[in-house]
Amino acid sequence: MRIWANINPDLLLAAFLPALLFESAFSMEAHQIKKCMAQMLLLAGPGVLMSTFLLGTALKLTSPYDWNWETSLLLGGLLSATDPVAVVAVLKELGTSKKLSTIIEGESLMNDGVSVVVYQLFLQMVLGRSFNTGSILMFLSEVSLGAVALGLAFAIISLLWLGFTFNDTILEMTLTLAVSYIAFYTVQDALKYSGILTVTALGMFYAAFAKTTFKGDNRRSLHDFWEIVAYIANTIIFILSGVIIADGVLRHNVHFERHGTSWGFLLLLYFYVQMARAAVVGALYLLLRYFGYGLDFKEAIIIVWSGLRGAVSLSLALSVKRASDTAQPFLKPEVGTMFVFFTGGIVFLTLILNGSTTQFLLHALGMDNLSVTKLRMSNYARHEILNKTLEAFGDLKDDEELGPADWVTVKKYIT
Image (cartoon, rainbow, N blue to C red):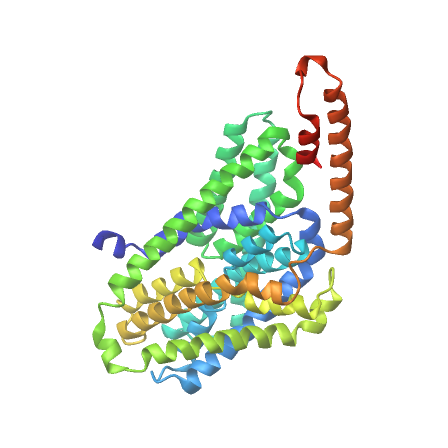
């Protein structure tokens, strides 16, 4: 257990995150991506920056830890990465608006990448590096735009390679798995750009332009393969994160004795996270209504409530803790420990409170009801199925080989 507790958080990201990102992006529908792109970019770009500064300001002004602005904004940035797996699963299960699940899932993919870029910027500041306005803009543009361009390049090259294959499911699975990891490692480690944005761009390009490359049963097999890989990766990363938090944080009782309000401040921080999310969606609401398919007030409430935190935030907090072991006096070990404690607590609270109550919220807002169009289609389908069943019943009733069946009872069961 101790070996797993001391795992390198960068390895945790590199081993499991590319699979999660690619599967989520690849499973999206191309038409929905194009129509909802502006809304996703608004929430993932300006939305993440607003959330970072709102949370950072709240932490600086109210936390009992005497953190400077850079440290407060660092925690605010890594807490701005959303992971609404539970919410999206509920939306898909209930058959609610495809537009809404696309916006929430697409925003999560993009804001993970943006949050990592913001995290990298403020971590450099915490470690003593100075930035002016020009260098900040240059850093953000290089790390983000360069990562997206490289993701598109990897996608185009791999698709050209796939063009030379025909009906080879194993090769298609292997190639898509390999290119997602190679792209992530190349960009994240070698070039120091955002590997998350690279894999997100790669997966979305595949979703938009590559699905016709995979024919028939191969396409279904490929999706099943990626669902299994993503499920395993998500399960392992949460188990390991729980082990690391339990072993590396809860054993440090001295930090909690020094700050007896840590558990109470965790609840206050959860409130800050929800209020920051509501403020971001509220500030961008008019623009969100204007672009794409639009957005009504009920859908905006669900977007606010869908701001769960997950694997990316946990991994970034663990990276801060690892950096704090060797970055004194800029970053004390106590700060790294508290980062993991607060991030793990927010992940737990959003998953338990937000994730488990989403279905009730959808029901309270009347969003789990079928639309008029879907209800009409459902009734028509039921009518046609009943007609076909009765036709088959009539044919079977006249079949002498079936013998003296109780056809009155049979008809009761099928109508």
